[in-house]
Image 1 (cartoon, rainbow, N blue to C red):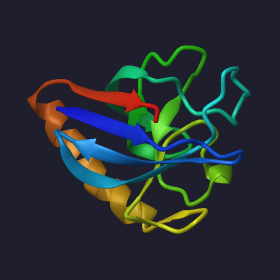
Image 2: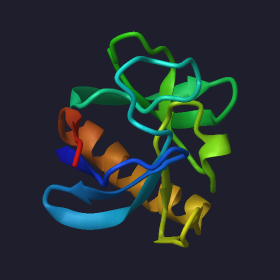
Image 3: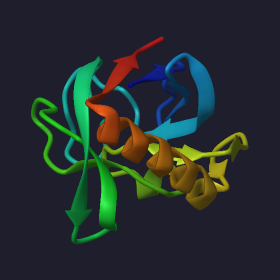
Image 4: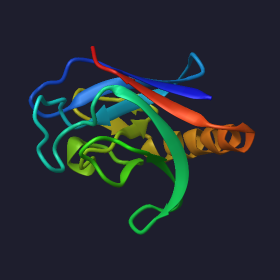
Length: 132
């Protein structure tokens, strides 16, 4: 299974995008801005292809979608949240978006977790991140 995060251009506060699962639209995304130099907790992960897993997270609980082997980042998760203040470098998912936020995040995350769990049961799951 392959997820593709297609980013829009960043503004000074955030980066919106869309997430696709095997070529089918899944949900909206929100991240910190894409930066040339990493700022701890305030920078989106680099473009690339990353293996996903589901792990227990002290902050987000069991079966947290984890993005593995991100250069210069640790504990990158796909999780619920509404604004760039919730990201700390992680992609947030939501079913809808406003000018500055994403909404219905917990519902979007539940749907995505089910798909990722199914994909992992069948083999590997990958995330491809593409900047605009």
